[in-house]
Length: 196
Picture (cartoon, rainbow, N blue to C red):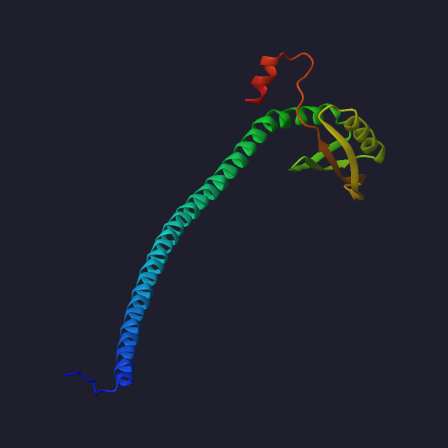
């Protein structure tokens, strides 16, 4: 007897296609989920690696900042010590100069003038004194101008006063100190000894 399929073949075919579609869709979804998971893992590894690099760079930057701060402190200390050495050197060089200046003032001081006060600020020396006449002050200024240790005498104040029946002139003279130079008769060792 001939077999006759009474089931609707179209319906069966549609059901098979639907099953095949769902199976393919499930496989595609599984592949998509696996791909997304793999991409997530890869990107997470990249992020973790970059975070670790950033942490390393930040720690190195902190070390460099600390080193830079130490270098700045050392430079400040070096500058302070250099300034101190310069000050000591200036004091050592100017120590014998003041002796020469006092000797020079004594030798240039004409008769009839008395010095009452001498002050020094840097290379400027202020001299206060009493003179019997203006001519003696002028003579003193000429002698100072000819000196090899001081220069540029400037008369700032001159006041005339009568004391005990005598007419006296109070004056203030400002002169400039010349930097130290060894005398022509000194040898190099003498000049060096004068500086120390």
